[in-house]
Amino acid sequence: MLNPGPATKIYLATGVTDMRKSFNGLYALVSGTFEADPLSGHLFVFL
Image (cartoon, rainbow, N blue to C red):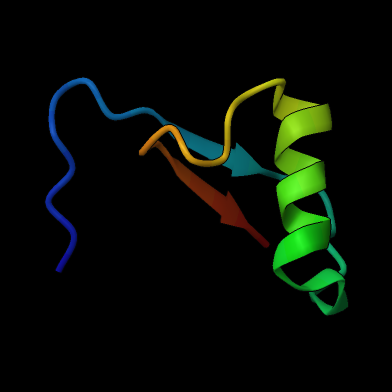
């Protein structure tokens, strides 16, 4: 079970996400769409 701290943000990608992008593609998606650092410790959820 995840127990994020109080400062942890959870980003939700509500559109369709092509999971064939693998980690590199999702990394680019987080950087471009959310304008966030994927290594920041925040959670990014894709549907």
